[in-house]
Length: 79
Image (cartoon, rainbow, N blue to C red; front, side, top):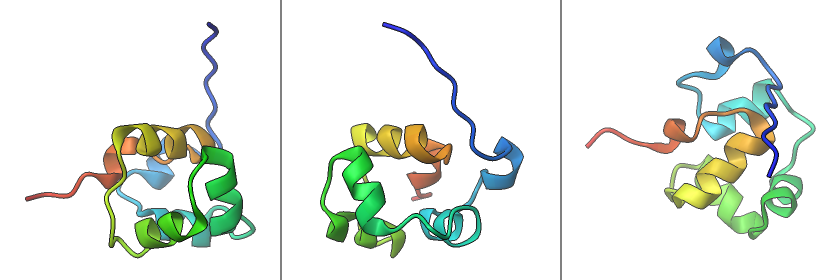
């Protein structure tokens, strides 16, 4: 396979940012439906992630990172 690095915004801009903040400030045209289609899940799941009502699996967090540049670690919450 090939490795490709895709950074949509500088990393220091998005470290610690939530998915909701990212979509609102860095990519306001990206809808829940569009992101869901890109990563292969349901729109309502993205909505719940934005509302921090769900925690994504590693696969989904990694897919979101691939599409947005938002670090998968941003979904990890302190206990």
